Amino acid sequence: MKYVIINGSPRVGNTCEVIKQVKTNLKGEFEEIHLAKEDIGLCKGCYNCIMIGEDKCPHHKKIKPIIDKIRDCDGIIIGSPVYAMNVTAILKNFMDHTAYLYHRPEFFTKKALIVVTTAGAGHKKVANYIDETLRHWGVNKVFKLPMACGGKDELETKGIDKVAQKFSKDVESKKLHSPKFGDVMFFNVWKAMAVSKDPIVADRDYWFKTGLVNHDFSPDVKLNFVKKSFAKLMFFILKRVIK
Ligand SMILES: Cc1cc2nc3c(=O)[nH]c(=O)nc-3n(C[C@H](O)[C@H](O)[C@H](O)COP(=O)(O)O)c2cc1C
Image (cartoon, rainbow, N blue to C red; front, side, top):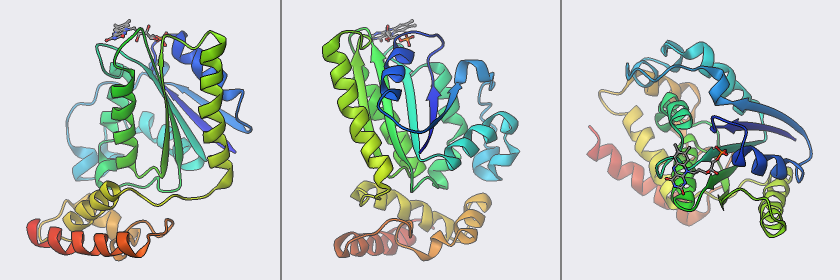
């Protein structure tokens, strides 16, 4: 299996320590990206990625290799310490550069594990925030490891191992899980926007070029009858609401 590790900590500390323990439970190749060393530059809010294409981002040369590594992996490990009750600015800046993926989700076959460390508070909230972002990227299944302070004693190590092994088993199974209703809804929000009268050009091109526009959800992922019907109903309504 191929794993890409996206580490949003500015230092080698607790987050690295937990990720190191996670890795002992996984078999495969690891590509580690320490965002602090990538020197991406702050998102300028130019809207280029969203409106005309991610290749028009002023930091495309820095972002593309990371996105390509995600494309090429089976599992994503994404880590951040809690800073002022949120992800680090380094990770948030990377996420801002992936805002276009909300409009044009593509990682429907990927599984992810989120590692968040904290001195005492905010770890669950921050893990949930990263989860939300990954689901907008299209990620199929997300595991979470919100850790209060580090993971150094034996009990914490056991907790890390338990979640990491579940993640590993799931990645190796290659099984794709049924999406949540919220994920089906958002898929159809962006699909309805792409087919609207006045679409964002980059979105329209993506949805038509990939053929996603012809599906209720990613064709890689099976939907049962109820979710299929829900998807069709959502699209029917959204197409009329989004003009
Ligand atoms: C600037 C800064 C802000 C922090 N904010 C919080 C916080 O809001 N809540 C908290 O419980 N811990 C906070 N912490 C503690 C870190 O989340 C915690 O020590 C974490 O495990 C550090 O991970 P690292 O060693 O990978 O940097 C903060 C630490 C720093 C340096």
